Length: 300
View 1: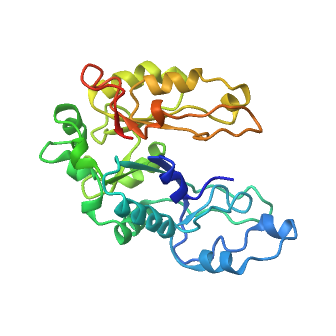
View 2 (view 1 turned 90 degrees about the vertical axis):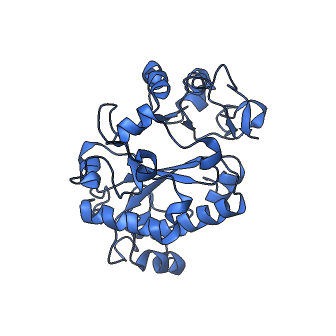
């Protein structure tokens, strides 16, 4: 079972992923078909939480629907509280998949589309919990530069000192969802999320590059000034084989955020785990700061 968010943060996680569904009226996902097909009794606390209007956190509706915080606002409130209690933490990246697919269960409930209205509501829910002063936002990074891309390439991101205690959100989606979130903006003016896009986009600042084959591209992008998230493992492949080659390549690539399912090993599979030397939470970037402080812990 995945650890609760607060335990993940206490264990050193500084990149979290939330899978969201749009539920403006509430109750759309309160009675999962999978539970009914399996003959499971209804959980009144679950039904109550899922009946409230607002975004819900679940992986696959009707089938894989039990998250350890059920609503987006509940998850954000946990993160906000932890952040306030640990004001010197290095910036936490929250990536989001915004799901709008059909149910895999016969007679299940399809997810609502994520259009611009949905994304406006998403920004509004973030604003309910996090003031702008608690975030690293596209506007803050862009400053007076004509585009967000110009800003990160010519000026860069906030310093580590200015970024401590802050949160940044990123929409980890494809072009159609990114277009709906950007709307007619030249970059991401007024938005709270960065978006996953290619290096040539005016909105380029954050990029997801998850494959081992992306290693050279990751290093080049990090040197240029982009923030990159990659992953050390996927689909239990590395853990089953206790294969650390992908992990080691990810950590050496310079990617600022390296995701894993195994900050601690799953002994049913192997001893595979992903942690930094000395059990540091964050280290000075091995690509951007190799000659100054590469590898030195900046959050022990």
